Image (cartoon, rainbow over all chains, first blue to last red; front, side, top):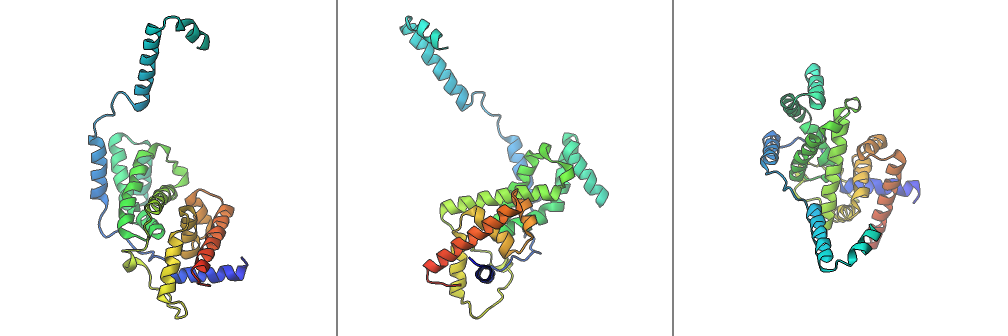
Length: 82
Length: 185
């Protein structure tokens, strides 16, 4: 694309999308909404003690204990791979 | 006023929990107009710009420990607001919505070249709205808003060369799309 074509396209684009009025301001004071957002976060209950990963780790551990209980002969094999 | 501003910046970064909240409120009132205006330039949607201004200040509130006073609050806030607006554009793209409704009253009147019909303007705007968000945001700021490329690069966290490349790619894609619709700019 040469410079002349590029300038033409830029002019064309400015015709289609004139710049936004730089003096534009919010139609209301946004502070009350901001406060509500901050307060909502403060009132949220604490995150559960077990996250998704902790539950997944627990399930893996339970599976491993179950496997060892059913097949004790697997213990040396597990130790080898640890 | 200047003392109040520098005091607020100090408390925002280093103050106790109480003085931090007061500093945050002061900074919010000082900068909400600028952040709103910046987001409006990108989104061209006043209602969304209000919501995104709140989202930007929410992220500012959460990230205050990373604020570097040497870099200045306005530039930092602008970078965060740019990322928030970019996320919004991406979500809109996924939803296949177009960005030009409800914003006519805040957009400056068109230059009014009679050679460019309203239909062609509308098709150009729609084609522009379908560009990838990263290209669209860069072209909006650098071409439509005619901001200095250095300023655009700083807000987007990229180099001036990357801004030039993105503008070039945006215009090339726009030209292709318009030509596909039988419009030759």
